[in-house]
Amino acid sequence: MATQETQLLDDIIVNSRRRMLSIGTSALAGLVLGGVTKKAEAATLTDTDILNFALNLEYLEANFYNLAVNGVTIDKLPTPIGITGTGTQGAVTTKANFAKVPFTNANIAAYAKETAIEEGKHVSFLRGALGTSAVAQPAINLLDSFNTLAVMSGAAASLDPFASDALFLIGAYIFEDVGVTAYHGAAGSITSSSNLSAAVGIHAVEAYHAGLVRTAINALDAGTGTLTGITQKVSAFRSKLANPTSAPTTQITDGGIKAADDQGIDNTVKVALNSSSATFTSTTIVDADNNSIGFARTPQQILSIVTGVSPASTTAPNKGVFFPAGLNGTIV
Image (cartoon, rainbow, N blue to C red; front, side, top):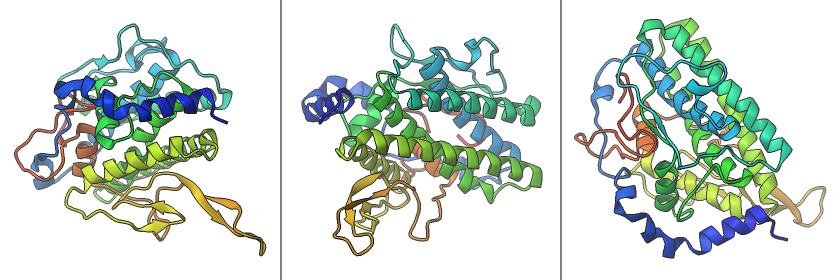
């Protein structure tokens, strides 16, 4: 039986083609498969460069979760989290008359609250570790960004992750897997053992978050394929942005169709247990390769996902989607 959440998502998907045109070309302008600069790739990155890149991403996540739970950005919390630093400081764009997520599921609300606290601590920790070298919070868009990615991935005509439990989870899904692959991919370039230990520790927490999000989505989906279908489209599009020259794949792992470095949730495959018929659902939740090793992405691949600019060109600036004015620091 369809719930209110799944019915809402069904309506969005059914009407997506007709409503896509209502967004207009201006909302899609930030998402181009046209290229990304290789400036950071050509330079030798320092630990400060890498940690500041991570700080840009943590600003994004911390604001998303605190807006979802508390209705305010991190600098407006009762105990504000700092956002000043080097580079151009920016504000967070949200919908008019913004309100926090009207959670109806206590477990999802509890997850969101815990994660908001933890992502805020990541920002504070990185700022403390970087000291006067910490970058300022760049301009962040949490309105047009989700709508753009929803359309371009084919998931829906729009996406408001602050509207309901289910849509919040989809918004969180977009972020968490990216954070996990970012920390994994950067680990090999960190030279200080203390910095590496901290980065690996943050990576572990981000992986816990991603696992929670994926498990919660699978549970809320309840075998309908509505929410899990969206995750598969999001994963495929993230991989397309990160690997624009890779051929489409039909690689199968536990029933889930895997892209080059991403895999959505799948709960459609039935398996046999204890010599029974194949009537038990086998769910693919973990985002990993055939050896069950988590995916890793380069900073340039992460930039492609969060700005919507694919790495095919060497001339286009990395501005768009979640970071309309670009990131602060060296990896931009």
